[in-house]
Length: 470
Image (cartoon, rainbow, N blue to C red; front, top):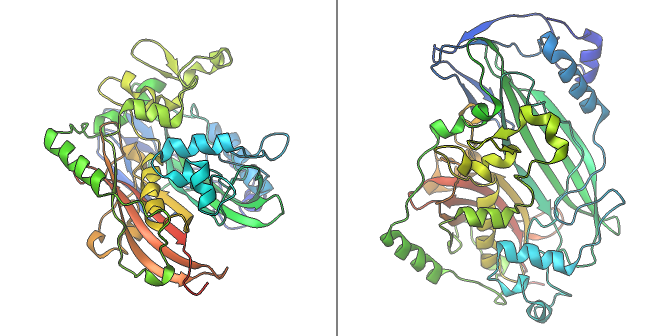
């Protein structure tokens, strides 16, 4: 095992981390062991070692083995370099500069996630509502900066990854003809390994500001992932496909929607309220108010493919020939990229397709836009969910927001959504205030529940509302 130069390491981390030193340990997989780490939100994640006769390498934070050294050193250097320019979202920046947003792009995005609201789908309606054209539905454009590259999936014998959700704030409507640029604000590369754990874990994140063509600051965003791995010292080593299929063992069975439940779904559809041109004034909102629920689903595998796009997501491209060791190989011998967990999960025996991490969030947003009407604007979306791999799961994801709702205290996301699930969007106004831009604002805690009362997503949201005084 090798040490990084102390001076170099301290320089990378700004003088605030432990020295990379020597250390060797073993973890016997047959002994069921659970360690915890702190997440970006302060929640705890568990490292679950299954009851199998395998000995794993144990790790110490800040102490790296020879096979880890160059990879970690490279990412420390990237973090030290700082953020680079970038852009995100369907209308994001390209190599030649910011893309001018088209109405066709907006309409395609809007129809995908909310085909019911005429404000986002009907040009003439939008103009009568006082807009120059159809406004983009929330999260069409997201601030995004450059960050640290992820840990290679073939670094060890088992690899796990998770997304802790994103926090997106955009304070303006977006129309055809607009263009935006992003400027990186900060990047994170932080070790979360618990001393003596058999799971090495890192948090990799970045934040960025977004500016319009006039140079005005109109948005901010943050997102992170966690990469983790295990090293087997004794025992059989799984293929990459076997490793990527492990979540199936612990995943709950799919929900079967009964005739009675379908009648309940129909009743929720009938009760949905689209405020439209009837203004919701800030003065008329009170803390504790609850928007009318919306119901999406039951969600099928065809829905998931249609929403997220399936172009060549499973096609084995020529350029991937040398990367077969980190491609998923299904029961038919086909090579698929890592999103096979979402798209091609049906090719994993005993599994099914699962939600992209923010799928339920988009259906919750529909409840918000219904509630605030044409004159309101969703200005913040912070989405949180339960991770797929047991090794990466947090304790009560979204608890810091659900605890603000009296009836939801002590709860958190309980399952990663999958095909067959229905998303019943619910919300609660937690705060009412005038923000630092002088805008009349409300905060809401929102969540998505399934028909069997499991929570698949938590969303912290903000919205700007018109004032009677104006």
